[in-house]
Length: 213
Image (cartoon, rainbow, N blue to C red; front, side, top):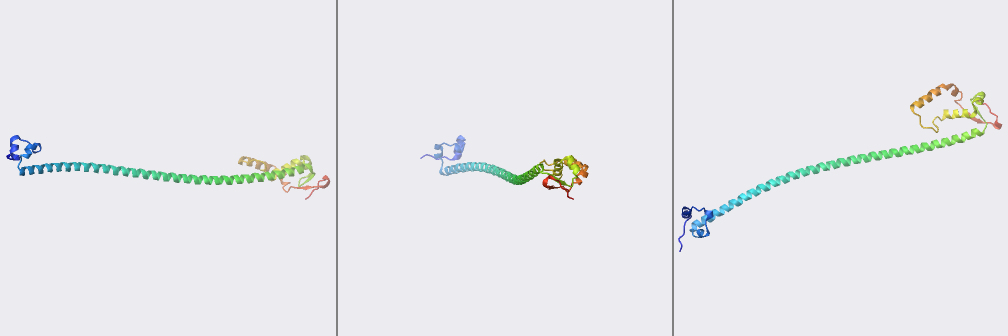
């Protein structure tokens, strides 16, 4: 039977660390020393595992913190994008409402312009018919002296009557300057126009004018 040696004896003999003992040397140890050696080795392994666990936990904790930070940044970005989309949708809605209002206004203006054109057309047709009648009929213009009628002619006087009563007929709207000039001209001819402010047309029989007062 082999003589069992202690760990102390091995240390004194070869100065060999416990974790560098050969299998033969380990088998030659006494039971007490063998158990002590195994216990120390297990503790060493446990310490290594614990250190690795701590390192792994520290790494995981750091990565989790980074993930949370990135998640918060992503959430803030999503919130900013959402707010931008809501603001854009609000501006689009306002623009659509304004466009709708403008379209409605354009429809109103178009309708009013069409009615105005129809009214002007009817008035022009009525005046054209009346003018045709003037050209082919002997008339007496009430309020105009007979001498003036002969001097100017019936057509000239009738044109003045139309211009006085329908100043904008068949014309574009006057500007302020044109209206002012027209007003000055009207004031200058006030004496003439005042004499025919009640101008009427009376058809005569047999082409003979009749004066009515």
